[in-house]
Image (cartoon, rainbow, N blue to C red):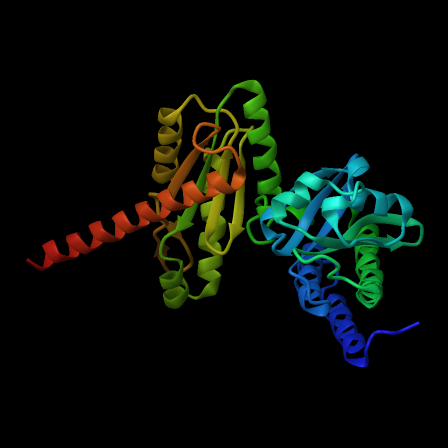
Length: 340
């Protein structure tokens, strides 16, 4: 039997060393692994799916799979679910003809082939590492062996995370470490669920995208501790304005999202936007300074303005950047007026 090359084995060892340094940071481990998988076996997409009840949930994703963070697939009708059940790697060289795969999900990502390898510690299979490509027959036996070696250490890291911090495992996989808010994966999962439920109930919901203004000047002037404090405070104020049924998330960097599950229409959303902006007016008092918080906001209402999460986020992004441009223009005009 052919074995992976020395260079590839050394690459796996290097990844394993990175995982070991991360300790019990499960979210960090999963994100690291999917990113490294792309280069390790030369594929265009990778994901870690965890088995949760009757579903497989995308908890980390990279490459072409990244937009699918939070996606839920039924275990019984997916290759990943079969992998968890069998405890053995499974490969599909042509997903368009494979009855074992979720063809709709594969079609939406433009996939041609994939492989799923179990994340198993002892007799416990907690999920899979999935590698995917738009090319047919893109993954061979040597690639599967490399992924199998990688999965052994990933599963061990997950096992010890469960053993030493069982209550925090799922929370850390679905929440932002700095702010404690939902992370992008959990936000996308709930957005998909809410869009589907709104369509079924003939109801409306909305998504807000917020981009913090002026984080770089805060970091440059007062240091990154002040910048982190500003991000935490912005998240806290957003959470204070949200209803119990809403989800507030830090999507990454200085970008936040708010999922509003039930709204009456544009006026409700605008009123919430105004309430959020008003909550940011009081400055954040740090040890030796005051920091002014502000954010640009855009929204999209579903299902009337979009039927998929990607459509909604794109529209909300466009409106957020339009609001940011308007704010910059007003600031410039104000500066010119002051000079006069």
